[in-house]
Length: 116
Image (cartoon, rainbow, N blue to C red; front, side, top):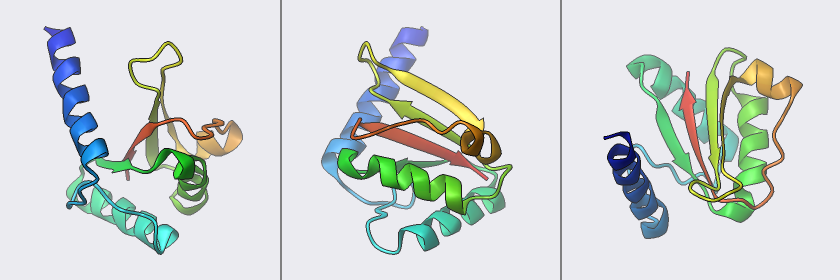
């Protein structure tokens, strides 16, 4: 049962990522990145909901750096990189903990989940 849910979730995320369609939950952060990160964090806090952020792989490193420099220390960020690959990494930490030991993302495909 878990495998089916993971597969369905992965297919959904793949469709969102490859489709490149922006919606209320999938944010295009190319312009005014830090202001949009703060807005996403605020929405997450108000709605008590996680927000999913997907970016082009070559911008993932800068996005992650901006997230940990912009968000409140208690905000939680999950980084899911290289999903389904042997190099898969999925880690969730508070911003305060990410600042102590940041992850080198480079140009790996990632899904970020933010909970303010």
